[in-house]
Amino acid sequence: MVAANTTQPLSITLRVWRQADARQPGKFVEYQAKDLSPNMSFLEMLDVVNDQLTGKGEDPIAFAHDCREGICGTCSCTINGKPHGPGKGVATCQIYMRAFRDGDVVTVEPFRAAAFPVVKDLITDRSAFDKIQSAGGFITVRAGSAPEANGMPVPKPDADLAMDAATCIGCGACVAACKNASAMLFVAAKVSHLGLMPQGQAERDRRVLAMVGTMDELGFGNCTNYYECSAACPKLISHDFIARMNRDFLTASFRTSFKPESAGASGGAA
Amino acid sequence: MHLFGLFFRSSIGRKILMAVTGLILIGFVIGHLVGNLQVFQDPDHLNGYAQFLRQLGPWLWVARLVLIVSVVIHIWAATALTLENNRARGPEPYGVKYTIRATLASRSMRLTGYVVLAFVLYHLAHFTWGAVSRESYKDNLELYTMQNDYRFAGMPVVKAGAEVHDVHEMVILGFQSPVVSLFYIVAVGLLSFHLLHGFDSLFQTFGLRSSRWSGCLRKVTVLFCLVYFLGNLAIPGAVLIGSLRPHTARVAVSGR
Image (cartoon, rainbow over all chains, first blue to last red; front, side, top):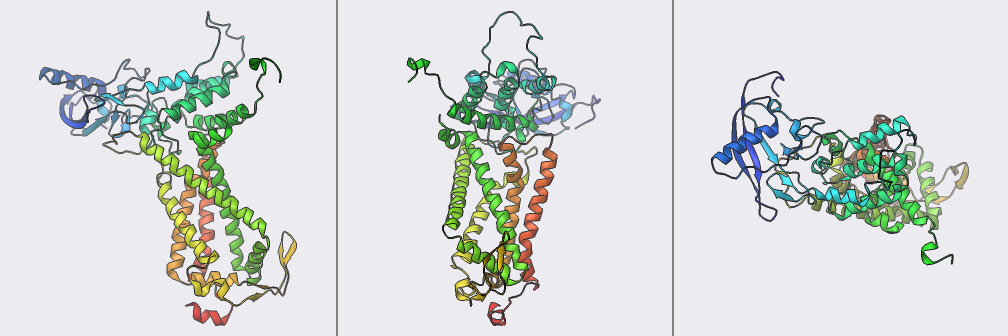
């Protein structure tokens, strides 16, 4: 990494995964990116390379991006084997070219997971996360004007912990970093941020069972406690939430298996 | 899904099975080591202890059954989870493989598991079935006459004067072969390495681990694995350096 205040331009060799669509095989293609400002972001560098490709009449590199300020979770490159690149606690859009040295060979790949099929080049379809979310990542409440803020007391430590989990932007870096392509950190964050709040208690058991069940069905891997996920997470969400989800799942399994059911649905007591 | 399905089919359920069976097996290896360290006392202790275990009769088989079921579930869950994990990466592997912080112990669980399984089978063949190193197997050694009562939890379970198998002698003769001893040492070393990841992982799986005490848990794990390894190293180590010798002159000659 060069000094943070440098203005010395740098040149790198890019090895980029190019794949026309999900059905066709992909391969690495090399591009030279010359005279880059060290203070341009990684995605701006890709913009510059794409300008040059377009000028030559070639197909530009497709990559996912939206807010470019680290809060939307759209950008998703794996840079030199690490999801979101060399930084800690930042997304790809917050990586600057000063993180690299002049002459570096930089390999850029999509997030690799069976549940995240490649759409094109560096873009993957991460709608599997939406399916997990819609299986239980919500609370059933009256949707209307904002409720009275102090109507339901929430202990400050619980609110803080719930907020830690709620910082998840659903980018999928945890899946990409996990050697088993497991989505446990994402699901744990979503299960925990609602499970820690009083509003989330009514559906707590149903939520964890449904979200974990959907995660399993979608072909994500299983957790073997490598803790690569929390290290790659741009929001540095702790794997403590995975432990919390494991306990929630265990409790919910027993509770739902032995909980008496109302006879009302079958037309009265037997 | 009912409870059975939740445990045997879901990802977290099978992790919990791994943890529960792992815990049972950790409990066993601790007890096994503590029992075997009696080899450092006079032959009455280990031989009395071995005779006491034999006298348990059907209860011994209950314990064995629990261990066999644990091993089978542990291996089945590991295999099923690993196959799914391999599929989950998708059609294309990463061009650049990079590890941020996963420990070597965590990444070699499968390999250390295979070696431990091979070792367990050899260990059973050696001391339980007598299929290898037959000349020093307990059936082929002279019976040992207990000098004193063997007490377990304060109760005399094996009386003085009883004729019992000479397990003490069998262990020492068995470890006089450097090849066998070194294999044991390497295998328990790898088992300790396996537990270096397994021991604190089971707290994570049960949801009992958090950053408030994970540093402490890690230190306890490392200390446990080290003590476990040194305890296991002591037995073949002491035989190899000659501080544990056969108690009868007859077999000392044939022991080599």
